[in-house]
Length: 199
Image (cartoon, rainbow, N blue to C red; front, side):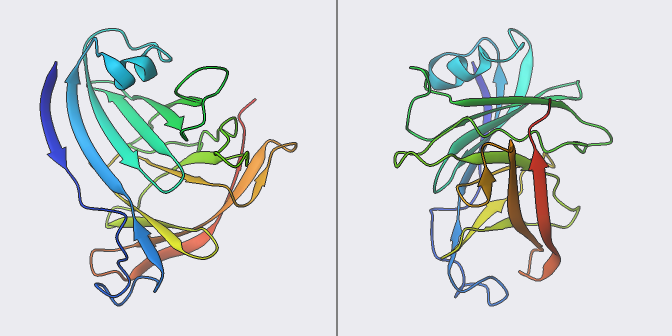
């Protein structure tokens, strides 16, 4: 049963002209936030079956990006966080091609929980990872080459990002170029995130 829904901004719109501090070729993703009582059905239920969550209440952040749709799920009253990723290309017959789990420490994940099992419809490997947003961050931007993908922050949870760039499948790692922006589009931080698949 869906307890409450809140919608974030974003329609894959070009945002660079609206806020001068953002990159000129920027695309902002859609984000929705749910509070959900388990069990769940449909696509969300199929993701939850990949986790240990079977009952109780969860906070769920759904992101629809250029390459992936992702779910970040936090059990209410717990430090556990789970994620599912999909690209529209099935993985061994399954809708969700990636699943990750982590433990929050002071509201942050100590590891980005990289997943590189997903492929897009062109057969390219897709890297997905979590980024801890800074306290004043409004967007987490990822350099995608010809454009910057902007992921709105939501409810203080880590932001699930994805890219087909910088993926080293044989090395089980990926490199993301990440910029965090504040409410007025000013740069809070800029750097490289090198993530390794946890072993």
